[in-house]
Image (cartoon, rainbow, N blue to C red; front, side, top):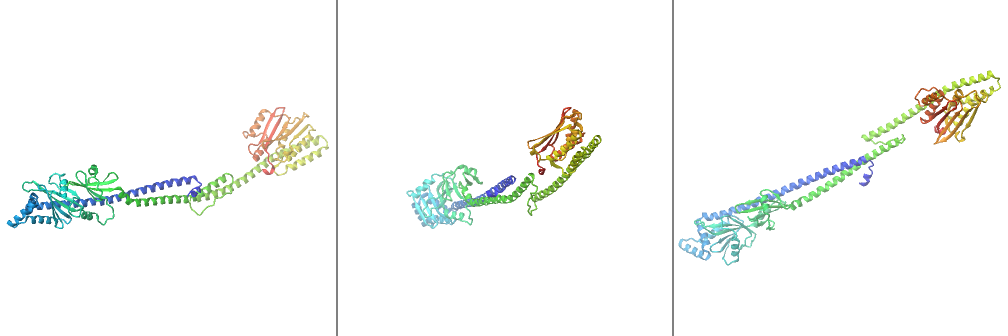
Length: 600
């Protein structure tokens, strides 16, 4: 992954990868969180529904058992024979009741003891979950049990079982309201029971004479409620008394410290209390509360594997998206890097560079094709323009040179003519020789020559006028020999020398002189042509300088043509500089780069 990222050379693509990776991470994270929330919410609702059904089943069962208990008591009041036997039994106790039953049997052929057992036996048949029925006597203080095997036992006030019941029942007032209890001690081997305790009153005096205790087998009820085909854990159910004591817990984990607020705020709705969902339903008949309890760990145990799977899939997707983005982007980054590298090479003057294109129809391929076409067009354009400009400059140079040659030819021939007329033909031959040599050099078509040849050409010109003016002209040549091989534009010195002969020489004086000096400075060559002639008027000199700067139309064709030709060949920073003082002389400086002929 790091190697792939390092292969992406363009910062733009790194930003794109970072941006879209963040979008993918945020999107997948949000999607995962939403999925986890939905799964957790659905599982919570599923478990709540299961627990709610469990509460309803428990409520229905307890209500059904309560109604059965009430029916058993009501049957006692409805059947007078049963009532007489049961009430007599509770009033007088077992020994006396036995005697009372025998007497009644002998007199009236009625056995109250048989009626008593018949009532209890019929009551047992009311519900198959009834484990036993107990009669508790308040006055005579005894406990009589009758179980589902029609076995009866009598416990007087001295027995431990009676004492435990007496102590337990003394905590409750003698009211008509049923009392719900669990795990009362019985003589049965089955200890897992819950009981409804109802008060038996004398129908005439309405005085409480005892209690009937109906014990239900809670194991059978527990199995009927919880043994279902649903594999989900529904939590558990607690049954609380009015003072918030737990009397039944489906998990057998009795907790005696139930917060009353749980019952208050969770009535018929699930509320989250201390990492536990709680819902309560109150049974007002028996004054009990059925509490549905769902610890969050139950939900977490169900959703944890799914959450881990979602997180794993999310991480794999994020890594895959980032990896594919890097692989996809690396190709485009390399192509874009090739484009930028090619542009840099073109910027540095390499027009031969071309970008390799692929068979992909996208924007980068279009840019590469257009770049290659641009380089081709640019090469063609530069070649055409360069050739055109070279030809144009060559034509301009030849044109400028052509303007000078006729003028020079006229002056020279005139000098020869005047010399021949004034004197004999003694020195004519020499002048003609010099002139022939001069013309031969002038007719050469090359534009660039060496400083050595240009000096020889200028010397020939000056030699003609030295002969003409009878040695009234002195020529001083101070040029470094190492400079002679450097190049210069042809006919650069001669027009300046000619300008002195035509305009500056004083024929009345015998000390006319012209000096040619040269020197190197900063890889440039400076050639100075200085004379002691008449000089130039200040206004004329200013016009000449303005003409050299292309600010006014030139009046001196020779000086201007030399300056323009030097600028065409070497550039605008080169050319002529002129200074002059009236009746003192003139100095013209030629400034050219120090280059050999092959370098131009």
